[in-house]
Length: 213
Image (cartoon, rainbow, N blue to C red):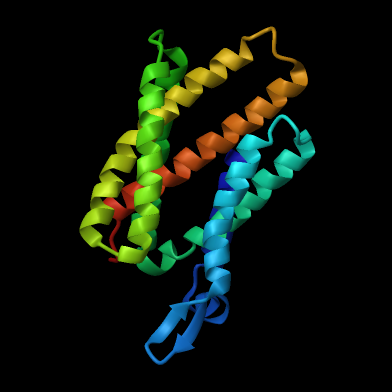
């Protein structure tokens, strides 16, 4: 997870410039600069990789899964690099710190709590699917009010899922019936899931509290 965050962060910082976007992700039209096909590929390709990663985890080898995780983090780095064009460095840094603190607290709570979070996790997953679909719809609608609502719900859902997944990872780690190879894959899947939750929590908070100043 931390490896993926570093990769995504470095790429986003390095290529989050107006010059890079105009050269690779935008095409000039009579209406001004518009996103080109490469931009949409980079934006939506991670969805396919995430589905492949989770559905084929039992069939693919650990090195291949690690490669998919690495590719995913690279694409996400390019996909979120636009935040450096929309928000100030100070705002991004503060939001990242708040995200890290919130994430750590929820992860610890999920690890130490004795309460079974399975039912909560199922409900939050349904909410997550709703947020995912709504985000795609709003990508084309471009409604600021709808985006704000999605971000508020996202903060609640992503923090809750963080605690749930930490509890699930703890269960897998202490399950003696799971083979060492399967545990490695599940650990990688857990890191992948926590990475996705961290990134989405960060972006949700940034949309709510980020500023250009």
